[in-house]
Image 1: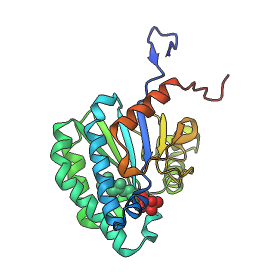
Image 2 (image 1 turned 120 degrees about the vertical axis):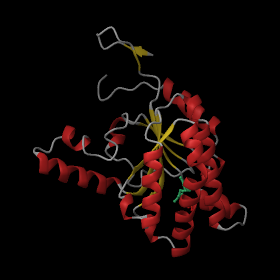
Image 3 (image 1 turned 180 degrees about the vertical axis):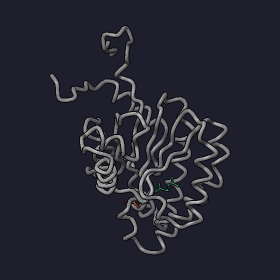
Image 4 (image 1 turned 90 degrees about the horizontal axis):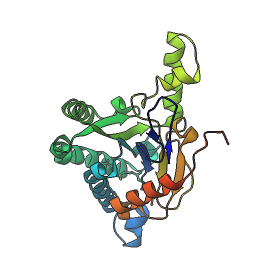
Length: 235
Ligand code: FPP
């Protein structure tokens, strides 16, 4: 449970501070019900909303969600449009709630390459939520290899490339270390998400399709995390 670094401060290493989720299975959720994929994504947004509403109760400092990868542009134009429109709608409808619930929005990835109206909307949302104490980080137009390459290029410009200088230039540089990475829908791969940050994170792969994922499932994942023994390469 607690672990003393010898300074008199007790750090509870069993408590997760930062969880990230690969939200997978919207399409299969819709297919099972003979519904359009767009409905699966809409239900996916509802699952996001439920989690954000329950965030305070989890004690987490940060929840990072993989909403749109740099590879997702390969989907049909209609599906990309649906996802972008859901993003616009989500920010418009939930921003006031974020502010009221002390949620700070953060965006990771190459998000400034999105449509100008979305960029403007996100910039406004970032400014309005800047004082929040719990972070919802959304990965948009995100690819971990690109993030690492960008960070390494910036580190090189300023001097030496080391693990520390790369870490200091990642999009997640101001977030707590990643404790737990969850993927839904039974797929067991990282899909270019937080590859650097996952170096010592615990992994949890669950069969639940994303639209069915509930705050209780996150609480259960956190309980599971609290029971794991993390070694960071030691014994
Ligand atoms: C994977 O399901 C999900 C995505 C590619 C997008 C995730 C997006 C959302 C949950 C909605 C947008 C989020 C916000 C924050 C507004 P899939 O389509 O790959 O499912 P499948 O593998 O079953 O086809």
